[in-house]
Length: 395
Image 1 (cartoon, rainbow, N blue to C red):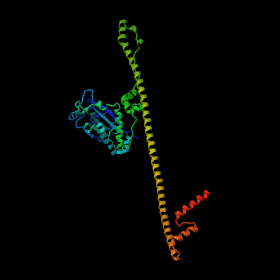
Image 2 (cartoon, rainbow, N blue to C red):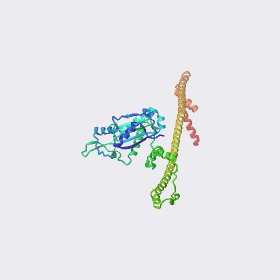
Image 3 (spheres, rainbow, N blue to C red):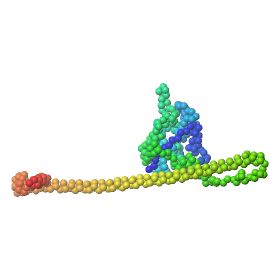
Image 4 (spheres, one colour):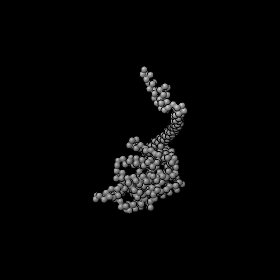
């Protein structure tokens, strides 16, 4: 099953222009090879800034008279990166993907009672490998001043004051998206796994993998031909001149070359170590993908079994309901026959008494019952026979 993903980054005022150029695709060239500029026209905004992010920040700060001390080192804005995996977006389709980001946007407006007015920009990107939304906002807290008057305060540290702030954010986002009909799961928090989760791409960015790999492939341990000091014919030189050349020219260069050679050997070892580390990272990434695929298959199998069970349960229930309905219908018909039989017997007795002038009907019935030990009432007859069997059993 796919995950509900929301990540947070904090920015100082000096960072906002660079964030603006990236999110709004204002750069002409990008170091990120995942960006496909031919698809940038598919990107869209859920909230467009009127100006660049720096001017937009200043405008909001002034418009809503935000309190709080803002220093050069202060974090003044936060950015959520909201996404899931490619399989999830392919599965739900284009319209549901748009609803996913619209629902996430609404979540941010409501979370900690932030309000839409403090969202600076919300941009959905379709021109990278995974669809995602960059949502930049001002971390504003609603509090009171010393006199008890309500104020809005720009304070990143207070907005994320709780030690488990990010865990609360992840839980709230997951519950909100699921409650709005998205079939997602909550990943285990890092407090429980005790692991820092990096993607392979993040590892490469952290360690400058591509450049390192290229250097390693192109490295050649070749040094210029340098004459050894011992090969120089000292006798050809005067003693003073020879000592000067040895000490000031030849020996320093020879030492420098040897030092560079050692540095190059160390660099080669470091690059080889990094290459092995990334081979392990790629192996881990493949294993992780396989596990996710296996989990997805198991989930589909369980779902199929549940559907088959429900179908069988429905078939059995329908079968017995039909059988019960047939028995009820048959029982109703038998009851009608019995009632009609009683009615016919009554008419027959009445006819016999009248026809043969036999007196009262009750007297005829009693005589029949006494002589034959049989009741005309079938229910009484059944009870009578049961009592006789019980009496015989006790004897």
